[in-house]
Image (cartoon, rainbow, N blue to C red; front, side, top):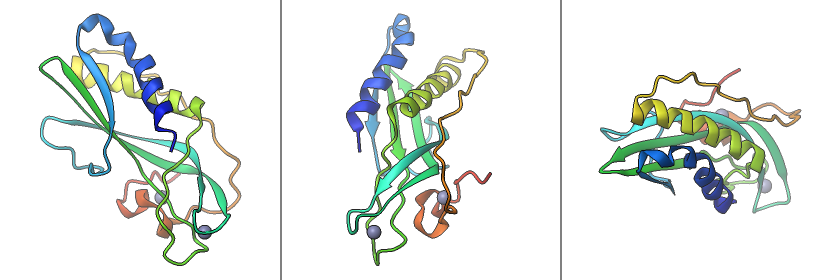
Length: 160
Ligand SMILES: [Zn+2]
Ligand SMILES: [Zn+2]
């Protein structure tokens, strides 16, 4: 996964809060679970699109049903956002490994813009209007595969 892109785009978007005097950083954390933030952490779950490439065969597929879980907290001037993009696996391979999504930079930007609005509301109690910019969708022909999707297993996959 392009984690460097996630981190650098997060840094760029969170810079809008520089004048608050706190430091913020993004951490990938596979141990966080959707709808179970630890006490004093706030949660934000957002859908995006991504591509997946199976490491057992050559199959790749796009998905517009990729859920990303964020848990955020501001404590002692130290802001932390934990992120866990939920995975999918290949429907053709037996015991195919779960794969991390490859999200396009434009869509990471959309996620982070929306996330920063949540940080402002949740951690700074700012009464701002949330714009919730939409992500760019792929043209997907095959149906979503609940048996091969972590979001569905956690029952947080947005059904539309
Ligand atoms: Zn495969
Ligand atoms: Zn799903």
